[in-house]
Every structure is written in structure tokens, then in C-alpha cells.
Length: 209
Image 1 (cartoon, rainbow, N blue to C red):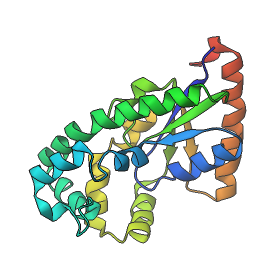
Image 2 (image 1 turned 60 degrees about the horizontal axis):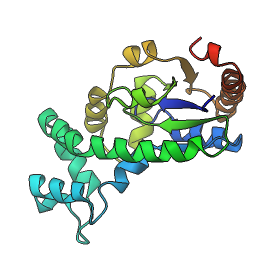
Image 3 (image 1 turned 120 degrees about the vertical axis):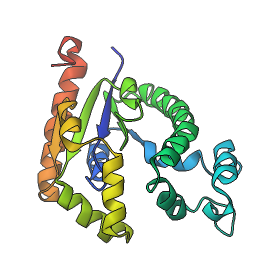
């Protein structure tokens, strides 16, 4: 049986990277769609040229790299612009993710992770066997993001509105981690899921239980 691909998702500041790092301690490889999204807009990439042509030079910094803060302010203030940006970046992101997933399937690990904030919204859920949602209340998302990214509350709320509603995300989950507690509580949930996923790899008929 091929190793399982587990999709890890959650709203902004839910703790997806922290979860991935806990799985990594258990020998599980992962790829982060956010990191791949940065790769496809590096200088010299076709996507960056399209973005600069569409939005103008104000979304580039002095070195010709993407000014992510400036771009974020534009696209989260205008849904049509956000959708245009996604039409440029999402196909390229998916292509690279598929290549990374192929590499992880050959790694010998029993399963691996695709970490993506837009797992369902982007269609990347079609690349995974199970979905794991990292869940926190919206109030905690807002406070964590303001503290981490030095953005104002209005922009954080705009980002949350652009993502799938919490209830819908939870309804589509195969598994859920509650990440409003301590890091130790998070780690314990990861260990339990690791045990579960290893069992599923050994018993393919139970994959979607």
C-alpha cells in the first residue's frame, strides 16, 4: 500500500506549523503549501512577473522581490483581486506540491503531511487521503495573528472571512486537533494521531473510518 497523505489545515494562526513540527519529531515528513507559495513568486518566476504587471511596481520591494504586506493589503480589500491572484498562483503551487508529495511517498515513511491553510478552498484536498483540521476559536486567531504579524484587527478579520468558515472546515475534517490549550496538550494529540495513522497504513480497509 502507498503511504497515506494527510492534509493538515486550519484557519490563520491555528498552529499548523507547530503540529507539523510535532509530527516531524516522530519521523514524519511534511511539505508546507505556504512555503511553496513563496517559492512560486521568487524573482525570476513567471508568477511574479504576472503579479507585478497586474498590480504595478508598488507590490515589489527595492530588490524586486514581492512585498507580501503590500500585496496582502490589496487582495484582502478586494475579493476579485484575491481571486485573480489565486488563479495565477494556485495551479503553480499545486504542480510543485505534487512533485514534493511524490518525493515523500518514496521516503519510506508510513505517511506524510501536506500542510495547507487553503486545503479545501484550493482543491488541494483532492491530493490527500485524510484531512486533519487544527481548530481554535476566532478570538484566539485574532489575538495570535496581531501579536505575530503586527497587523490590525480589521485585516485579520478580512483574512478569516476569506477562509472557509470554522464550522464548515470542521464538518469536512476526518480528524481534529484542539489547539487552544498548552503545547503539551497539542503534542499528546499528535502522538495519538500518529498511532492512528500508522494503524491505518497497516490496515488499508480502515483508511476512511
